[in-house]
View 1 (tube, rainbow, N blue to C red):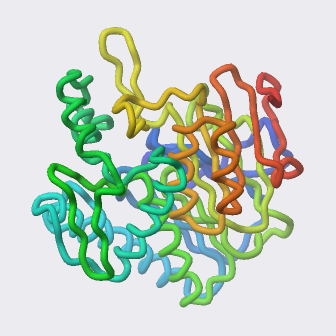
View 2 (view 1 turned 90 degrees about the vertical axis):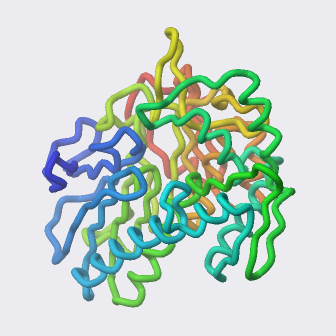
Length: 352
């Protein structure tokens, strides 16, 4: 299945799988990077899609109070964006922390920022929630995207540094000029929030897609494992190069094709290296992370994209996560734990 222009699911045949349907997380916006593949047997279900956090969220639920749960998920995502996570909405806690350089925070935001600082530290700053000044300069994903001057980048880089954030259980204080940006963890975190709602409403199975982050929850209602199609970084949003089989979990992908712009003949993507200020250049086209947490998989996918394959392996081991790495020359590398779970379906990609 894919999302059509009206936000409805339509069935399309896959060239690379046997009698399966495909739900593409990114069929509408280029920000999406994954697809869910599952057998097309009909089950009692409810589905809905909506736009939030700059991407399409799609929700498909089986069993339980599925319509009510979908409503709660939508409300939670929309409220979290406008009231908590957005750096652009004036009603958001993050917006006002950035504006004032400090602010009171809830336990929820404390926990999320603590995880952000932890991943920042463990990745050596490859992921850093204080890149807000940099992302604001580049404005990638908007009509105002541009290449900043060296002077602008130098000034913004001085504000980057997770270690300069003072975080307590009920407040946060930034150093001069610092700007928080939780965009590289927020969509995955929404999958975590969705999972809580699914449990409360006794949902048996679900697929939640939030741009590059996906949750497959419970047992596949058609039996067997869930099948997750990994997008071909060089293809259209409906092209996949491999299929990952798993029981349930969180999957997040970061790719250099998601949000881009071209200036003076050169294309720039949105995943910035916090240490250089420029789009990351580690030789990778995409990184897919599988872990037990949506927020963690989201943050790790950014960190690993910046670090590159070899440097990412200790980080994945530390968090018990798995990864799939695709290089510009179509070589595929992966962590040991999923080598028997990934099937490459596009012969132009080869194992590295």
